[in-house]
Length: 186
Image (cartoon, rainbow, N blue to C red; front, side, top):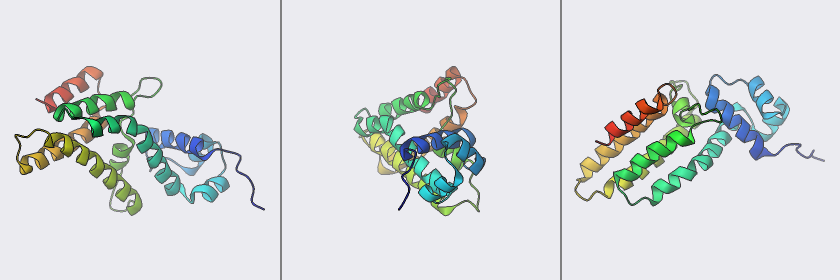
């Protein structure tokens, strides 16, 4: 007879997600996951298969949390003003309890990638980025004065700017980040 789990998966994944968000994928060890999640390696492997499995579940949890602001972007009918608001909303979203800005779990992980990185993780990051870029594109498209080429270029510029904001948010002050955002949308 199988043993009943003594933990709630969504709760331990939430803890793992915050650990990955702070440390990154590569710098997070199984020992750290054990301590943070409050479960042993056997339970981690039995439930999630591997560190990668825990990380992929953490990405899903991150996307669910981020959906609080992505839904707003999906429903926006303000053109690039909706994207600008998303940038500001992201800064609020990415603060931890101490008001330290953690950046973006996806961006933090992307900054760790190299040619040997797990292809499953690379695909998750690419899919996520493509989804956000599409939301930016849809908002830019609301500006009827732009050609298709200009829409695509603007969407590329905005997703790259978002990556820059996510990285910069871990280092720079709120006023510096506000200036960065305002300059993006001039």
